[in-house]
Length: 335
Image 1 (cartoon, rainbow, N blue to C red):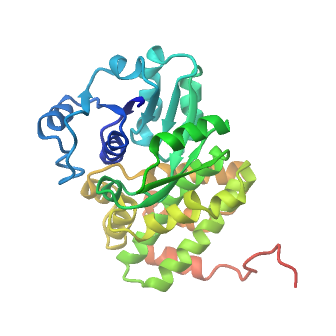
Image 2 (tube, helix red, strand yellow):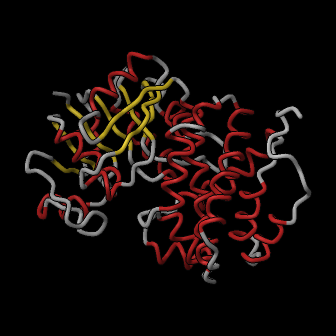
């Protein structure tokens, strides 16, 4: 049995805390919001974000960050990506040398173009930082529906430790050394999911969504490989797997926000309606920053940015994508 703290009591943090508790670990959950801690402690349920998912009496909840970090075998960082840096900075004084932090959020910081693990390493240099990602909506993980994820770490020993901690009969975990590829797949798929939602909002069909998913993963892989990620990662669970579920699922906040935008909502109105952090909006500008830095073409993500931040009509963006210059699907293939 491991002593584990989940830092962040949103839907994903709560679902993972329940999973870890069912695996027999001693689990504590931290939230910055006292009212959220009170709700979880008294009702044993996140009534707003995971209604109907009951939490065991053995699970504890607190707003005390020092108590949550000190003496724990594993820290699971589950705050939304815009708060990764500030939360890491607050955690730093209490983290011990070599303590393992598993980041489970998805995003790229717009100002620095850093991945979330890079941010954590910068703010908490004494920690050993790993990641866990894959096609895993909190609503389904909380209900115990089967899925698979990937644990990425710098050493095989750490990845296998995380694998052992999380894995059970409904949550299969693979291991990988490609932390960068895992994180880029997880962050950039949210931007493509916005595009898929916009297509839904415009009334387009399955053919359109399949095209967006396929060409979307081509964009993600093109950028990711230029940055040093591995192609096989983008063809795997944290690339195409996570992209499919985020573009197609009713649970996807990014797809839902995109659908509202496609129906005529502004970006701000859509985010307000979704009532949760829409990670793709925060990652969209960062993706274009990376595209410029590494000189990579990202036509779908570029059009999403123009819709979000330049008030470009969504149907006009689709038309531009369809009427781009003719080209081969894969220039590396020989005739």
